[in-house]
Length: 435
Image (cartoon, helix red, strand yellow):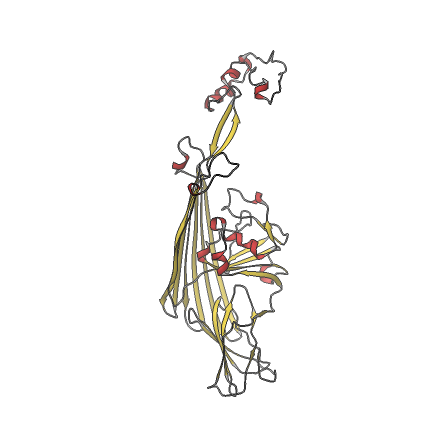
């Protein structure tokens, strides 16, 4: 709303907003009551100016639009000439009055700087409030591994996930598809309660995420995160020191192809994880048992100081080997050799993995009325085979391979100050191969 010194609405005032990073400019005129609306603006920092004959020009710095927000910025004009300018340097006082939901934005600073185990941005949903761990059984080897989350007590599979305005739910279990790594994620908003109509297809909550885009200045980073058991002290209650070896590395780069016109952003993250196998214990038939002698396995030494007496057809815990199932006896030839008379076998399975995330985005300002963007995101995960009798640190054969690709295309057309067409199309493809 634009008002004069008496608090009355100023009709016909020209309101112009300019995105400071890309030069995108949009202008509208206030209505008879001094109200104005500039919909479908990209997120980011803006400079707003208001001009009207008979009043001093008004300039507001520090306007920052966040994802899925509809703030109200009221302007009070002063009597004067257009050559005079009133500049407000402080951040704009913006109040959200249009959204019916209850939500919180996790901005870019928190996305990058908050500590994250594994740098999985999905875990940041918990800091938005009203979120807790959801049903872990929804995660299977039919979907890309993710974090199951419940918001405001709703079901874990009743959350809508959007990435750059495109659906980002897994059709297998309705959990989220992989979210981009923190350096490629601009921000996201978690919204629940009485959600707006466009999110009516899920009752629990909506997570609306936006990837980074380029600007008129080049920006980027390179990173390497290392976790290695050799750098850790042994836990006082552990038999041996942690053996985890985890490397996360990559970088981002964004900037202009043509200033104020065409911009790009690209990012990559690789994660390689190795660890010694966890130790498990199982029991298999011993050579003595296969010969029909079960006296050792039923002795107190194998049963917590408890003697067991087997029933007929056993006699004194012995049986004729001819009564044993021959297919079962043949199967025991495939089993490992026990380490004691109780049939104890110690074994280990590994949980090694290799993950590669890549994102590319282009933003094009066709003219003052039309903008276009395209985004491609790929997530590839190899869960290495746990079945190997050799050194587990040298396993290279994938056991399960997840290969996910996500495309999004958006076009915004300002037909006139009161009519805007916003179009989004998306394509998600997932291929999961189990060996």
